[in-house]
Amino acid sequence: MRVDVITIFPEYLSPLDLSLVGRARARGILDVHLHDLRQWASDVHRTVDDAPYGGGPGMVMRPEPWWAALTEIGGAGGPDPAMGRRPRIIVPTPVGRPFTQAYAARLADEPWLVFCCGRYEGIDTRVIEEWADDEISIGDYVLAGGEVATLVMLEAVTRLLPGVVGNAESVVDDSFASGLLEAPVYTRPPVWQGHEVPAVLRSGDHGAIGRWRRDTALLRTAHRRPDLLEAVDLTEHDRAICAEHGMGDHGTAGGADPNGRVAQ
Ligand SMILES: C[S@@+](CC[C@H](N)C(=O)[O-])C[C@H]1O[C@@H](n2cnc3c(N)ncnc32)[C@H](O)[C@@H]1O
Image 1 (cartoon, rainbow, N blue to C red):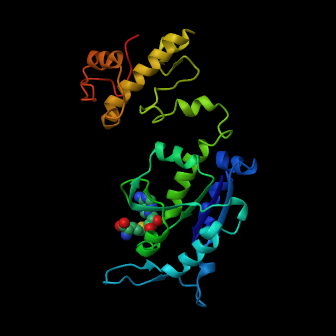
Image 2: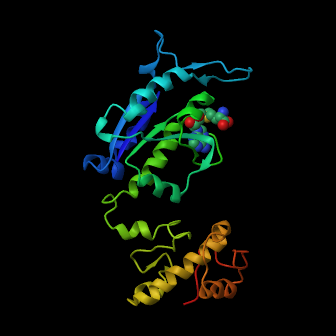
């Protein structure tokens, strides 16, 4: 996958050299190009912002540098004719659709993404209307710029690219992949500070372990994120487990343990 990031702070993206994303780049799975927006500013001061029409505080990113950058990077097939198509252009913004695992999976199928990192009060809306495929928010709070939001999205997408995560099954079992939160996880020692690892996980009975994981994932989700259950197709067994633990089908939390433990 090719990724272009346009920003006035390319150095803000330095975590892309590290860990899982850095390894994906080193192995050629992810091809990242960072661009300083100011190289497309036309005045001697390389200005990219101006006062907002209608007054008010802060500055707005001018359209011309964005226009020039997007035309050069992504317009008419882009600078790399081998890509042969326009990239998917994503603008991180608090007014966008919420970022989700399902959207990350859709992006992971794309060959080429461009992230446009806003600063100040954001990018002139005409640029977004003309170029953006998606306006995406990573949460209901306001950051100083789109760089951290881009890092968040890129890390979530990179984990889903084939060959990036060693054991592909761990991605399948992740929270949100099946609509539920993941079940609790444990490692050695079996007893730590008086807390015991659930016996079923040490039983070697993979059928029982699978059922326990599904049930605890269900109860955990019902307790912590009942909104997620709206989209899950619950089986008769799921409904019975919810009822047994004093929860409605859609997670009206009764007295469940917040960790979603079920009786063994
Ligand atoms: C200070 S914010 C602008 C906020 C804008 N005035 C508003 O209230 O919607 C500057 C930039 O940070 C990025 N940003 C801030 N919060 C974000 C969020 N929750 N998700 C994605 N991007 C965000 C966007 O790129 C935005 O253009």
